[in-house]
Length: 485
Image (cartoon, rainbow, N blue to C red):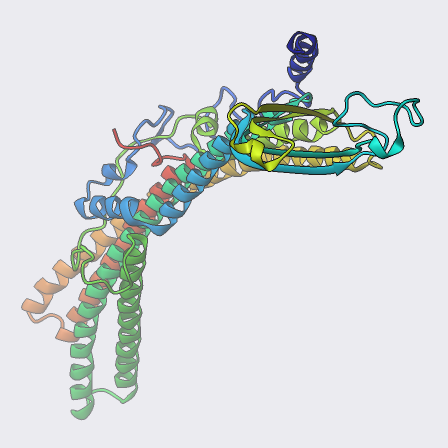
């Protein structure tokens, strides 16, 4: 019996080696991406050297920011969620791999059946009315009792199992890339919130100084009004300016509180957590003099969202093979091995050893277009994944060009604000000397000092805008996801 089955098993194994569906040949080529040239919007302060620093934030040289990002990478709930999705993908892959192997278990089987015209107990079936066999002696019932082991194994002629494993592998890689992209987003969000917090703290300090100077102006203006040297109108203007400064101070204080809460949540803590280690006030960190950005080709290879889209395309391609494999027949084997016989007592008789092999061939050759529709759906999903990949690449290139353009613009704007600050400082120094010599009043001096503080506020905004633009460049380049060495 075994020798007769060997040729059949060899044919089945040969057919099982066939794999349906297209083989994945890589993502589609984009003519405008990854060329020999660099970024169009790169300025003279940008280097074409490929960035290699995973922890890009250490270039800002701010220990407070380093601690916050370290805490966020350790305790942020969104990273825990993507980690759980990776675990799900790994479990799905293990499940698909296990589907290739036979399953083995224990079982207890009772079979009761009646097959008219078949003498089960007496030997081979005889035609009805055979001479010498009275009808009342025919036994056309079957009873079978067994307890032991059972095994099941399915041979996939179309390679659907292999394609499912291929798709699960690609989905696992996509889940890992999505986790890396989440790290990129998280580190950029923490850095953005931190820089905005430092800028808001600077505004709080500057608006408080300006309010104190404006209160002195209001008091002196009101005194001159009472003395009859000024009309009431300047008093109203001075008061209106003071109220405006108070509203700006309240806005800056609210921004500070909101950003502290944002940093708390990003680091996995409740809003208002007293354990958030942020100094009450600090300088706004500035980026390095030169920035390494590489070229579009290195960006495409580095950005995790592009790699996730590419792996999703690979998974969609494999699912086309899964759908096409449904056209092929499926052969399954079930085997029963144990103790048993035609009566329940045989289960306890070690001499009654029984074995059953049940092959089953299934082929849905008439399904009214169900398989074809499934193939069409898988093909459309593959085309969608290819379009999504192209869109992801183009969006990434646009993101990088936009970030580089903003970074160059903020450099020029900061240089102009520095010049404005220098002029304000010179004017304040000159008016202090004039006030000390009695050439101008305290009101005139305070107005000059207010302009100086306003220039300081604008300069702080410019410094923050430049650093935020630099952070956007790092994010657009896909930096920050590699595990620290």
